[in-house]
Amino acid sequence: MDLTLKIWRQNGPQEKGEMKTYPISGVEEDMSFLEMLDFLNDKLINEGIEPVVFDHDCREGICGMCSLFINGEAHGPGRKVTTCQLHMREFKSGDTIYIEPFRAKAFPIIKDLMVDRSAFDRIQRAGGYISVNTSGNTIDANAIPVPKENADKAFDAATCIGCGACVATCKNSSAMLFASAKISQFSLLPQGQPEAKERVLNMVHQMDLEGFGNCTNTGACEVECPKGISLENIARMNRDYLFASLSSNK
Ligand code: SF4
Ligand code: FES
Image 1 (cartoon, helix red, strand yellow):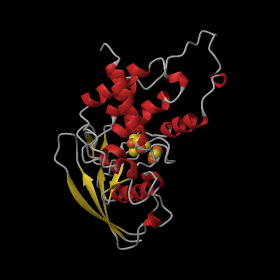
Image 2 (cartoon, rainbow, N blue to C red):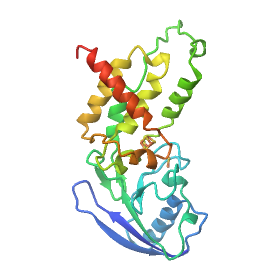
Image 3 (cartoon, rainbow, N blue to C red):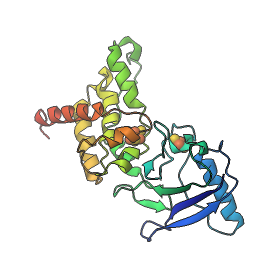
Image 4 (spheres, rainbow, N blue to C red):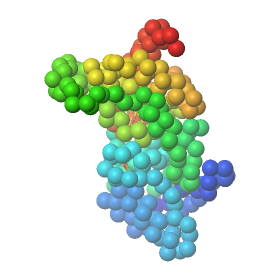
């Protein structure tokens, strides 16, 4: 395949970036999108040009590191796939492909296509955990009955990989799909109840501090989420937040 790549190049967080054009030949349709970028970088290195910086780790759709806006869509044209699982057979020879970083005020660009998503880590740290007594008297988790419907919904919420596509896609740069998934995975289970009120209050507070926008129910996040996280989680988080605010002394 012969392609024309238009790639965002930016030297650092404070630098001015621009789209640069890279024609490339010999791309195979069985390459993943990231393998195609590796192929490009080999070519750039051989030509003495600085390679394109992009984020990746597992390349299996698990870690949430690959975060590219491809032809105006987070993770590209596929549905429920991450950039690392996108293959070049989705494109055809002669195509021009626009590749940009995830853009949001709370995700500053580090270099080229790599952004800093540590705001997500700080939201997680604000309450995305449960405290369990591990003194030896811990109740076996399997001994606590959980309704099947709640177990399924908690598991679905737990599949969020923290990629940030929801933020990059939202016109308000809202992180509510992410935060609501991280809260729901505990709020639906008995083990999440002791800290439930503090969790939702603290995580929503941290989300606001990080500079993410609000949710205006357009639903774009759900469409672009590679893990199919449901908007139902946002509604649950809003209910839990209201209840916790009304019954808290904070
Ligand atoms: S909710 Fe979906 S799009 Fe948002 S961070 Fe989680 S997996 Fe990514
Ligand atoms: S590199 Fe891990 S999800 Fe894509």
